[in-house]
Length: 323
Image (cartoon, rainbow, N blue to C red; front, side):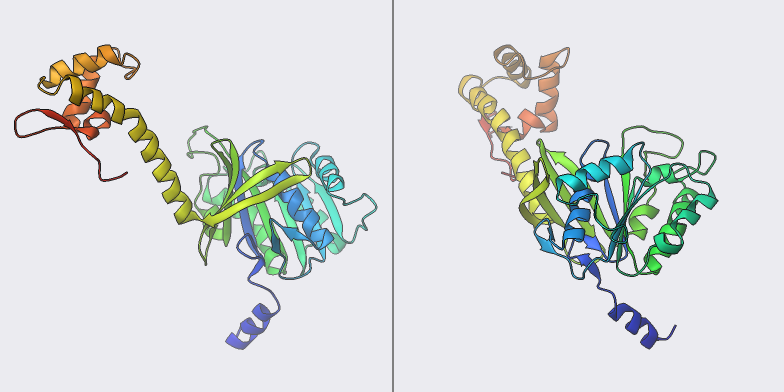
């Protein structure tokens, strides 16, 4: 294609379907099982069908149709119920919303998404989750071959003009190919990567776009879906979290350091360690608390960050550089 042909093609398609959240080509949403990913995508589908906002942001163009490819057992029914709870009734014309169910498909199953069902320009395609789309005898989901096997049809849908949003589960299991969904090709293929998780019990959506600043959106769950509470840049959110951890760390060790300065200013490190272990028996979970505390003092960690010995050997509390 010439530069002019590419420019003409790109001009007919926005860069983002929802600014900063949903790419016009490929978006990945990651999170743990039962973490709210399908609920969030039900919010997206309902907003697209109703012409509303998604997490407080307008769509850059009208979505002609929503195609939900669900591989979960009972997945289409769950999506139908969620959409109904958001005001999208079963009477919605089929040309605007289609639910497709297949699990561990063989190559010919992809043929179901041809003809009238074939994703096309103006469609929003949700694939939830992608891990079930590899046949039982297929390659590992974490291998390059497994990723390419999935992105073959998904990439063709995106090339046809559809905005594809794929879901994958995160987990703690380890195997020959690393952690579940650990292949870096996933994040490389998608132009926006989203991660939904709970932080301090609050649902948080973190964005990692290929262009533009990453964001952290704090959400609140309602019976009819998620609501946006606040948003800030991921860098600011990370700094805020670091500050909270530092404050919690300080509040734990400062009282102990003050007690040492007041009661053991002239003691040896071993005497300080024994005294702290007796005065604060729950401070260390080690089998030998005094030994652990002495190690902290020598390595300038934990309690050792807040104590130092002056020129005369006296113990005094310090103020770490990080508040």
